[in-house]
Image (cartoon, rainbow, N blue to C red; front, side):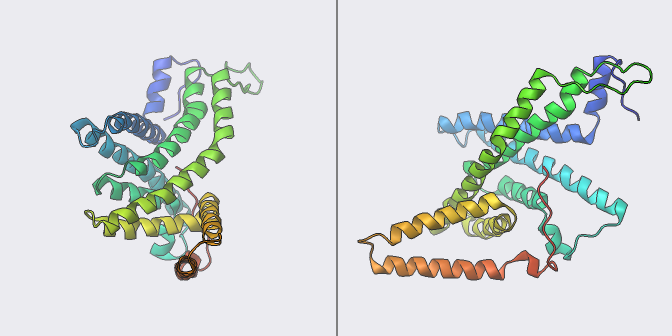
Length: 280
């Protein structure tokens, strides 16, 4: 069905937009942002397990699964149309960042509450929703005037769209650095839960370690975060007065970490093919 022209009534244009799969993707991101903010108010009041708090927490991850599920569906549908197959079979498929975030959203949905897990999804949703408003919603609300006969259509941009574009351009990279730091911090939070033998923490630790290892292989911000963390710990253990046993433990940790990184390199199992990048 062709999209209504710029001279069509606003209600008709908005209805046509709302019937697209991309709008469902946008609605999922918007829902995630709203429910995360509402959960934050409950968290600040230390009412984590109240009825509304639990509802908002779980709904946030339902919305996250919806948005990433839509992206994965569209990607696989496009590959099916072109007959393109991802190298590496199932391993190659799991190397897709969108599938990784989809699976982790489902894990968080059924796992005990970890409020820190919401923040990376909310940050991604903020930028994705803003980009959708700029590229899709605003042109429908305020379309460019019809071009004269024989003339090429004029490209116009509203001040609001320009401000949204400037916001995304200015803050996206720094926000991704914050997200990578939070994802690493979350791993330590889960390690603490595992040490204390909290419910299902060891299963969650294994799943999240696998997720974070894949993130490290694919994302330069995560690599930078780990690099900075290693430099800081190196500085601490090399200071005068540090017990030799602390240096030995740290050296052992670094050695085992390198072995784990080399043994879990995805390119060894996918024929050297690079993982699919995150698009949601």
